[in-house]
Length: 96
Image (tube, rainbow, N blue to C red):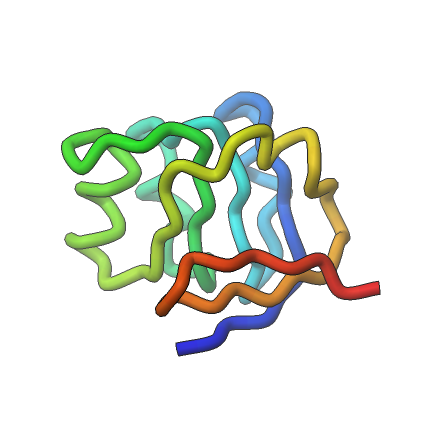
């Protein structure tokens, strides 16, 4: 599956309110505050790689695509960047 969308790079849960419909959330991890806006997210990309982390549990619960273990994702991808995610090989590409 390939997903394309615009990034919302989140540095803290206070940034969740900035989410636009069909955004791809990029963060170090998620917090319980995400439940309020999860329906607006197209996919989640997080820096940590732990199958029991909050983002993994939320992604499974709500059926959202998730890429874990994307080092420095919050530095590489900025809010507004358009990216393409290939879920089969966990490849994330910034589209110019």
